[in-house]
Length: 462
Image 1 (cartoon, rainbow, N blue to C red):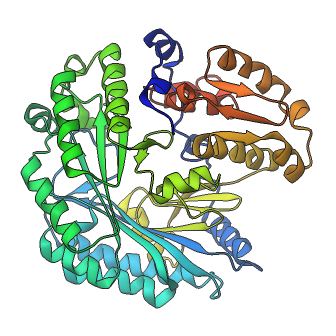
Image 2: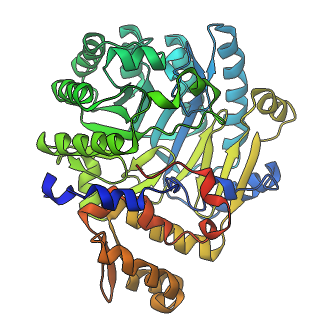
């Protein structure tokens, strides 16, 4: 198992590669998707995905509402305290699920469910049961399915947690971001350690299988001393998994970020130190650095899957559920079949109107070409399993890897000289230092990124 010295990457090397690069939740990335991909295109993709296909399915449900807006937030959320909004939304959500499920092979089993937002616990307990029943009534859920939910600790009650456990949820994920009082006040998210720990302790009392927490580095007024204190408190909580996200300051896209100034943000050098300090802390406390931004215990399924080269990544994050289609419901949600992406409307009125017209609420999507599929598999293997078998890619897609990717392999030489990867006759391997810069390694294989102006659409690596 790797130790923290393996990740001791020089600052000048990080600065060299600290560029605007996609996060590669998908390939091709979302800017390449087209609004010419319509409701009809989506039906065709789903139908094709279900022909002679008995493989398992993952489901995602998006609840966009929050009680209040966190100023750093990059998600598509609707802050409101009017509960009638959720009543209307659930009626349309049910219509979408019913409409979608009519095109799904009834022999396919659900192996994974995840609810995100927004904040799914914006819903009351009765509404949570209502939504879960929508899924049960339309799909066959495996008795051993992984069923997870993102909760907002400040608005989640013990009654919420009792209900979630009772109906079958077994994983809990929650945002923490930072325990510094100054940072919390600045980003409009006051969440004390004591309150958070009380919620987590109750989750453990209910025997949820896994508890995951999110942190963000690069927030306004973060410094090494205070963030180190946050890390110490995280160690006391002792979550099963930790996600450490890079804050992207894009006030032109996220107007709420104008609530604080760019001068309040950590300098690039400090931001890098915050990130490296967190990596060292997690490794010292027994976590394994999984990939882009996730850490897990050595006994966790994520680490075991990575060792077995079966780890995958989709719009729900890292997952052990390889070779599953992802069907997603609700505002802005994204479905992923073997060779397509389908994104729902981002505007609530447009979402409602499409469903009133008995159409899937599709905003845009993409059918992947053979080249897209090859590059997607390479990027997936890099970000998840930290290696690519040239022999396997050549066999699967009937290509000569070295010839097909002659230019990319030439570009990889600089990465190898900098100690980020190793190139062998039959495979490429990501070095520990390369994990920190895995987005840069992935970008080598991104044909679309070479287009002029594309890099302005993304946040920097660190």
